[in-house]
Length: 70
Image (cartoon, rainbow, N blue to C red):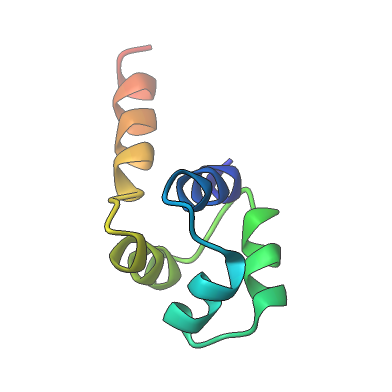
C-alpha cells in the first residue's frame, strides 16, 4: 500500500503533511488523500520520492522481482 509507505517515511523523517504539501505545491488534504491510496501516478511518485529523498519505486521493483520468482 504505497500511501502507507509514504506516510510512514514522512513520520520517520519527523515531517508533517503540511511540509509535504508545500513541497508538492498542493494542499494538505491532497497529502492525506495520498496516504489512503493503494496505487499512485508515476509522476507524483517521482515528486514525492524527490521531496523525501527516498526512492519509492524500489517498492514496486521488489514486488516485480517477487512475482517473477513465483
